[in-house]
Length: 139
Image (cartoon, rainbow, N blue to C red; front, top):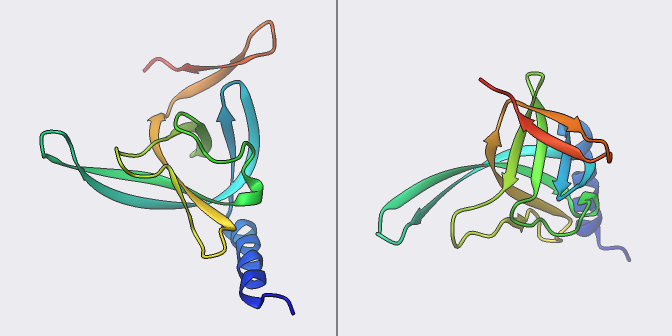
């Protein structure tokens, strides 16, 4: 007999991407891949080495594990999202002691990737070798 809860979680993950998904680019090094994610937000508080409490707000990307292009998210990976017609960069990052991602359901079929905005006004240039270069626009 099939596991109805597991099947339901997988179905729900597909419905979330189809009805509330945003197309984004996931970049690791020189590699780039398109994926669909739902957008969320997390707020973290952590104490720095001086004991000062720092607040950190993360833009989260909730995605099916099977849609992750390069396996588990790594610090320094970049997600590019179009916001109001402008490519916006979010780096996979968290405060010290907080995991970069966590599973969003009991069956580990979805992950919530934590990011921090690193640049808003950018352009992409392709060099002679075909490599994509991210160039911030002057403001």
